[in-house]
Image (cartoon, rainbow, N blue to C red; front, side, top):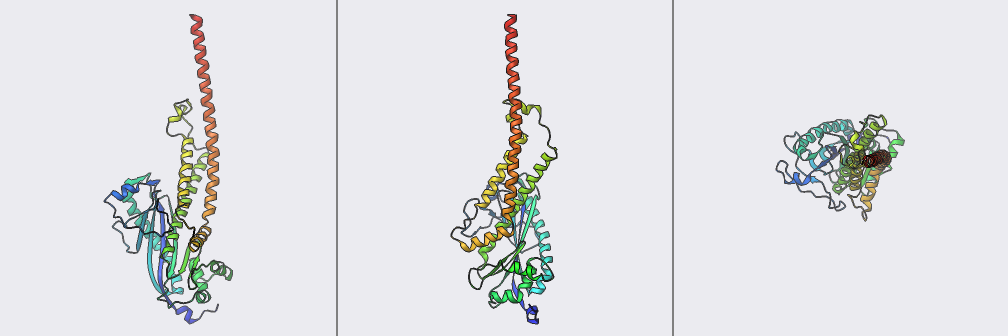
Length: 360
């Protein structure tokens, strides 16, 4: 495409939405948070495709904070918080391409500051609090339909497709024709005048009714956060075992009846970790009900593909199988030693009885 002065000077209005998610602990007691007075609660209006149970708690971002662009703060009971920022813009795509990285970096830093303020308020309600285990982000460029005189989607892709593609990759130069086509060919739209392009780290929306779609981006970002966190956690646990850094078990763990009730058992810890990961990943997978919603289902499927959520899930499943095998080996070893000790104890008791009977 040959760039014209009209293409370069055409101004567009819209908003940049940036979703940030932080994992700040194992669990958050939402009931206690809701009943406390230290954080102001706000009404939560999720789309109908979100299930009613295990919903997050929406709160007001605690003061002091330096921005009025944070439009949503959500707390999840599995230890994750989600912050959404809305930054309006009115400029050319060329100009926006030059500033998009600075905007993203600015609100990356801002989100850490705001999340830290929220963490301090929530710390007493968190199991094993830590700021922060993991952090994920996703950016959405939303173009107004009314303010831009309802420009057609075909014209958007034809005249501005190259700039939009480089915007979505946070590049200041135009991408190759192949890369541009790869990004633009995954466009989705419900009505004829709608356009939604989803990429690895960002998306572009040109849709009059886009609000409900935003919740899917926020949800997928939280889902990505938890998968990254669990993958990292499993790597740490497996590295400890591979490098033989695990502390040897105390002799008390091998005692029949007594050792099964002691805390610090690595077998029990691995089993508990496997259960926790399975429960939370299952909870996230079943939080949205997209049956009968083909448009939202297509968007979510594209998000899953672009964020490689299935790949992360498969990696976690493989590592959980390794954990299961290690747990079985540990358990068999402990059980065998306990059986041997129990057998020795029985033999000793029999010998004692024989000796006593002999002397009598």
